[in-house]
Image (cartoon, rainbow, N blue to C red; front, side, top):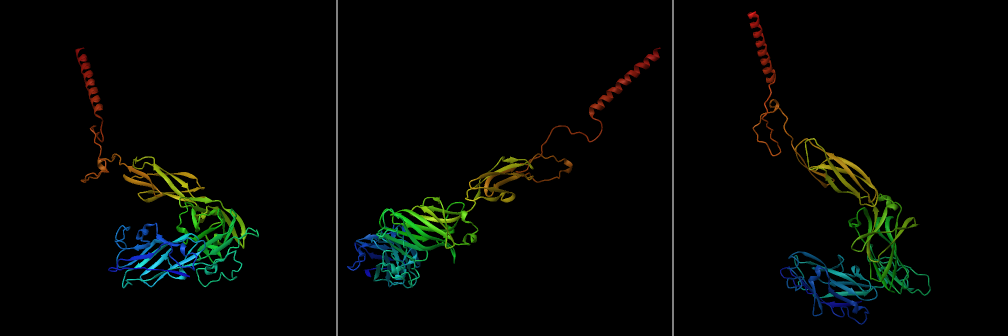
Length: 515
């Protein structure tokens, strides 16, 4: 083991400021007995916290004070515990597997990689060939601090398979129990891949830093030949024997050396793999760029799918390269050891989600056929419902007026199908009403008050002024008819008739008298 001794100075002013200086250069870990010492380097990280680090006179300086020329602001707050991820990067440029960790005597400063401390050999960061690890800091400026930390030791060790629970297929002297290790972060089984040729000298080393991570180093691989990597049934989801696992990864490369990293995503339900997919398990896959093809072979235990209320035919595998999600074709592989086996071909570096197909019905559009109506007059509300999911399903859609549900309809749709549903809405009360369908705005309906048809006898007297929603009564200049008796034109006609009759009688009497 070689140790590169560097100085870490933590200057605390009023329990608030900290400056770290870590020596770098052509050789961080110098020493004639370590063949990979020249391959370890430190540099500022590329993320926003990388502004805390910069190179000065061949040294990496991590400065948390306002004096940092690359820092925009005053740095972390005073008198507290500050965690900064992705401050600087450790890069290993060797062609083997390395374990790197940092030690020092301060209780106020801690180094972290991927959120975990790397301050002991048991918690070392594992670096495949030509790989890097991003390092962060945790600084406690509360209470009594160390003031000055004299010595920081950077440890690097070329990892033999037995050190981390892996082994090599090309190592005939490997101990038969080399996978047994008291360290809980080790224990991956070796891969025994071979293409059957006697002169195949490929070497496959598998490492398991923890239960959810697998790393493979492949050397001397024939160009263009598939290499099977045994993942020791890496558990993506489930407990006990009722699990969803990745059993094997088959890779093909355009180089004789390849490295592959697999990491299970602990909370797959937080991954948004698109509508109509309920994630069951998820993982991230990464490699050194030499892999050209990859086949992921999964299996599910009896009872696992029943536990999740789904079936094998409803399984879906989605992948993303960081821009968009795409569905992969599933090839069923029958059963093995009582487990249902299936596989997919995926791009060499991607995130994969194994999920269950589910319906995803939603209202995509809603509208109303009129904006005004008389009391009691109906308006028609229509809504388009679409199934964006990957399974048939039904949904009950609600019509709301001013947020209150007034009617429902149930619609059943196949994947990708769209249907239009219709509601009628009416009210006798004048006013403005906001109409919606399952939260989608359909419009506003204004119910206008009509003219008053009440007579004076049955209209109560009120001294209140009409409101904006009240229409004043309509006045007319037409004469008002009496409640009973003959109409005026009839009376005039009767009078004229009587007068004519009187005249006739008078003329008749005169004639009689003259005779």
